[in-house]
Length: 173
Image (cartoon, rainbow, N blue to C red; front, side):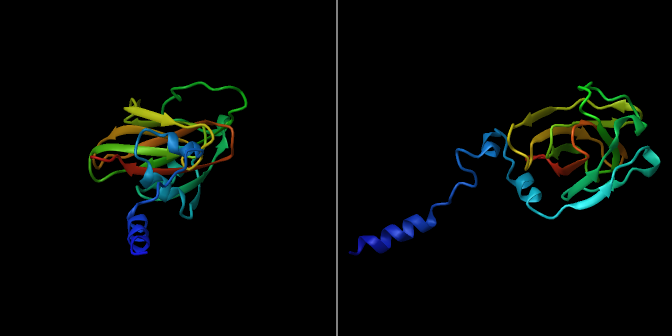
């Protein structure tokens, strides 16, 4: 009889896994707990820009829902670095400036393309991961961003007219 309370204490101390084996979001090999937490919050609705002049400014550590435009209406700072099928017809621009240089993650809820443009040149991504069936997030892309320098975010090749996005500092940075 004395063992039952001890067993209950042990079971209460065991942390439960945040994702089940049948959860497609559990297949990321990166630690995406922070991004998943942000995707569980209310999103700030913003219209994406057709040009840099009307592109909204994003800040790290927030969840945004960007209302995208018909891709032919968007004036990209640099041509998108990936061509997609005809059904991927939505795009938009946003701006971002980070205080500290480092590697940042862009998490998207849909299969879309993100380019980061600095001084007219597309930055190469450092790494990426995506998981089919998961939309919280669906895809993460890492870029090394400069401190205090405005960058243009180009979202393209989306099949949906809106896109949820977060920007977070990569763990270990």
